[in-house]
Image 1 (cartoon, helix red, strand yellow):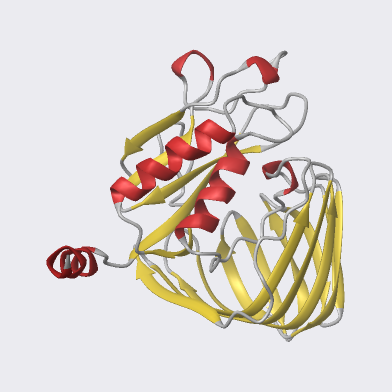
Image 2 (tube, one colour):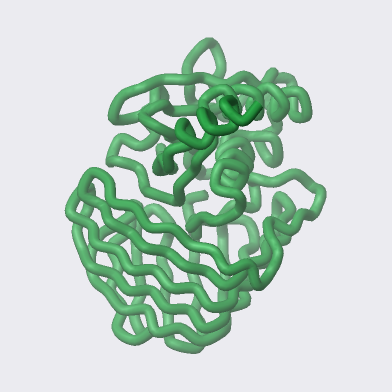
Length: 272
């Protein structure tokens, strides 16, 4: 028993977790397909007819969920073609990941474009891999089911740091809560700080400091937040061009148009 535990501890090396996104053709909504990378392996909801893309079908509830695995710079679907983004780290082993996927498919066997879709799989997987310690600020309401869920408790002192493929990031969060339905997402954060240097894909230096923040998103049309932040940085990361100085600034790109002040801000037309 002691020998087995010792081997497991030795095998549990920290591995970075990445999120890859791919813009989908316009259909019912404008959206991104999401995929997760752990240790060089991509995991994603497989699309129709063997294509690993989250295509919008006329009968989305009739599709059976299945997971596609691939390796390489980008996922089989093309998600992460621009390198993806680091969202956290994990010590989960491959056999544990496979077991978790089997359980997830058992609980969510059928695809639904507004609930059990590629974003829900990716968000749930990232949350499990990182034990809730991750950085993902994209709109994720369509990544959840109609059941409201609290992603993690407040006042959990957690963070991570990792450097990989031209991207170095250190993240710390005192606490974050999230309640989400397919059409509305509400989040609250306390004491979050991120230092990041990007040298490809993208480029820039960023220091994000949030004292506190309460935010909402309505569909992929509009969202807003109030609180206190001193975000400072300039460059391109995660598909967006950003420029901030002590909380004042904005960004434009894959996550829409966002205008910020130290005390709040608004964003419009995000591509989920």
